[in-house]
Length: 604
Image: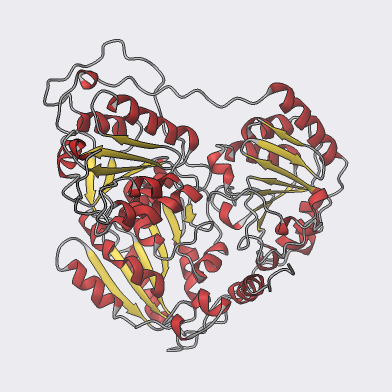
């Protein structure tokens, strides 16, 4: 049996902001004097709107369709709820995903089937990243259920369950509301389940129900009171005892934070463990942004052969390692090539602990476990001291000669200088994954990318949603030209919302990440005049500034303008790059993933 962790089927699911974004603030007290509503306000639509506001959603991303129009009227009527119309359902879903990463929960509203199946891909991504997104669909008239009628926006069959069946595998709860008697219960159960499970939910509401008053909606809904998940105390004590014995006998233990720190709400507990133990502290690629990089024992990103300098050497030479909330998939393990041994690993998942080759302890919350373990570990700084001895400061890219074509590594050196506690980075699937991993995040700087699902085009909608939620940060998005072509339209929605994001569009003429995995003519795309496209979208409405840069001198001038005279504008900077200008990490990673993809079938 292969004992390399990178080859194990460790449960998938999830992703990574400096310290966990706050869990949705949900009040637990019962109001002493509930507010009563008149009949025009005591409707299903307004109840849903009030619930969304109550859990912290102030922006809902939508695409109108005839089945959801009345519902949209009632969402708009709710004070504190802003309806943001998107160009398509996919981007509305991506925006809800980005919003949830900052705010703790997001929501989108689409129409039946044609809208639902369009948003499905984004909801699947949110499921993989453990994000609570409330996906609301305007459904058929309640009178049409159980009849033999064929409706528009369907595949032409009298069965209306196709959309529901599709959502069952990518949401943790599904509610089909086609009568008022149990609508209150169905909506509340769906929303509370999203918050408890940190997964998307699906709510379909009959198009004729949103405007109808009902006694169950006549008062302000009692705020949710969600009981915390509790650890099995005996199991927790046994797990901590076994883990402490395992780690205290190690000579040079290390710890690595993963993406499930967010869903476990254990970021702070992980840092407290690092403080107490003195261990060298690394982060997995999908966990970047969840672990503070200004921590005195931080050694970088552990990503096997494409780790940041000197990090892999320290992690893989350790005689014990704590992995908190990891996902070992083919991408994060660089084609299953991690040089780790299971018997040396303490793997802490949100609700269980595995100590080496020994027993698994279930029903244990990660936060409880890390806090208890911090009190039992001996201080051991050996691994960090070894790192400190071998560490050589990062070099700098070769300086560009005047009018020399701009190189991508030079671009990211300048992006590094932009980062502060007032910024957040959104990294698109592709070479931006690897270039952004090398950015050093200042304290308070946000960072998001979608590694588990890896859907190209995600970043445009996610930038819209994240910026709408994190109004205190300026979002810097790094997007490749191939990805941008998938979802470009919603730059227009950013303009309508008055956002001042900085978008670096890296134009290298194709799907560079796919080229490094397996090249072919299908990886070359039609070149667009991207700045002209954004200018056309702008069309004189809103604040927008675009420029195209070929040389470092032009890049410096563009960044100065974006941070100065155009700081209140959406700034779109198209960076012209050579088609073969990639990070060295992508070259290494691509060849290893290619090898993993091309393994021959096992003998039967």
